[in-house]
Length: 417
Ligand SMILES: Nc1ncnc2c1ncn2[C@@H]1O[C@H](COP(=O)(O)OP(=O)(O)OP(=O)(O)O)[C@@H](O)[C@H]1O
Ligand SMILES: [Mg+2]
Image (cartoon, rainbow, N blue to C red; front, side):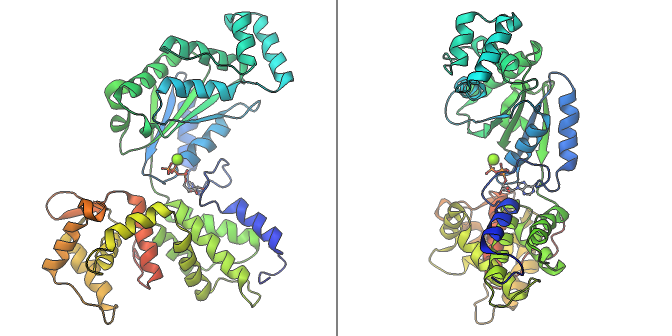
């Protein structure tokens, strides 16, 4: 035990509570840097018939925001309903939502619902009510079926039910998006007592839902940006405080910069750094360079396998010079960068510190960068006009930074958001 006053069980409990690299958040206390957006959602929901659509990069924190907002907006008599869209038709996802909203298995709640609905609320028939309260949801074959069932949820689940439809981008095709748009429209027009929060990976609402809801009357768009530096630091500071240690500003800054604003990396580095401190032979109350370095190394090992595969596919080809090319592109704040600028401002300075490594000429560097967009390299980067590039997925930039840091190369030093 190397953190004063903490046994392993207590330490594990605190860590699990504060650092969640693989789990979405659902409480405002742990959701850092999103107060403004939570207020925006609160105001949109205050407008009758409005629903929310959260969109942004993979891993930026969409589900966490949706869950936290849903818990705040959902009336206290129940929990929000969460369903994930997949390849299945949208109407069957509505059916899943209805199923999880039912009081099945809880005899007291079942009785309450039956009693309420028998008293005439909602005008649902006796058989229909009995079937549903026993947990059987009839197939949803039309928009009307969906609306009828959602009205039932509006009456029986709670005073103000909130339903999250997560991973909207996974819907199979345009027909499914259209079905979703129609359900939203009918729910609003018929004043059904349920409110939706939708989430999806994308850069615009139009991209995600197409033109069907382009009037924007029913949906309030919430574009989600990467976390600010302050919010990144807050995650570590809160966890460090909870275990009774301090992490100096220079380490907070480095973690913030490496993460590139993607919270899972902050959680991951924080978790590994605190474990390193806990495992230290000396009793310690302050994070030191060796804890930081070892924590980063462990974070690389613990990172998502899909990210490792993407990185390795891009860099392990014919020559070992791709890593440094990729690191150079992941440096600096701008997501979209021009070849000459990357070469001069990032690649050459990186190579100046890499003693014993071969520095590529500008021509070979351009060629390598260009190859990273090909299928052979997993299309890790995409071209953005002549000589301009960016990462296909911004979350991968954070992983590239983590790998570079682990090799002693500090990227993104001026990366203030
Ligand atoms: N505002 C925040 N403050 C602290 N941690 C956060 C915040 N938002 C998200 N996280 C953490 O970041 C990670 C990713 O969050 P989340 O799953 O919500 O992202 P996502 O955008 O839904 O990802 P995906 O695109 O993969 O579905 C989780 O580990 C979560 O705990
Ligand atoms: Mg998500």
